[in-house]
Length: 231
Image 1 (tube, helix red, strand yellow):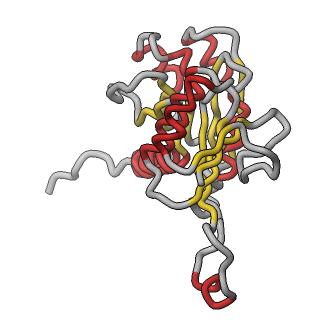
Image 2 (cartoon, one colour):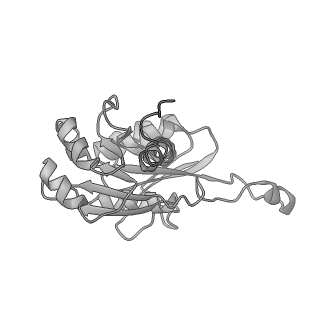
Image 3 (tube, one colour):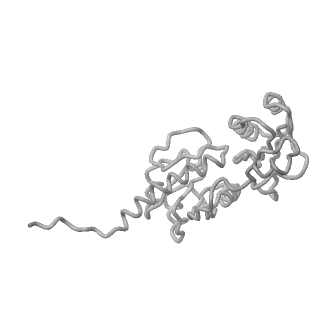
């Protein structure tokens, strides 16, 4: 059985709600046929389709944030389990251990808070900063007093020229990630996270960027050995 929940502002991304789902079906094909007749928006339906792409079978709860920007898939036991079997099944846990890397999410949308909630669930220290524009000056002003390892730019930056924005973000050693509504190459960014957002892809992209920029930051912080001495 596949159950779909559209989360309210009060409901958490960390678990499926204990209420009636918006949709439920025995098979993915049945659920897909029901989407056009449901009350879900086109972007929410697209999030469900992407969740089904990574579904490997079994009973699941699919939760989507309003608007479809973020989704999560929670496997459910399909039948009552014996005590011995229950002990052999891994209990739900975070997809990653607490990382602690400070992340700043910049954008125009008030829904950035949902993305921050997902980052906190994954073990990152994160904060959302709503800015008034997508100019380099607005980015510099937002980051002026913020110490972070990673800057995640909201989808409003998707069509903004990269170079001035990246320069504003990288006045200190930082990784810069773009949230993008359309699939695209990373270009000068350290990674791109496609919308709808899959939590596993978020962790993979951020960890790779943090590892890369962490090495670069460490290299920049080493004192220069100076020019070689002549003998």
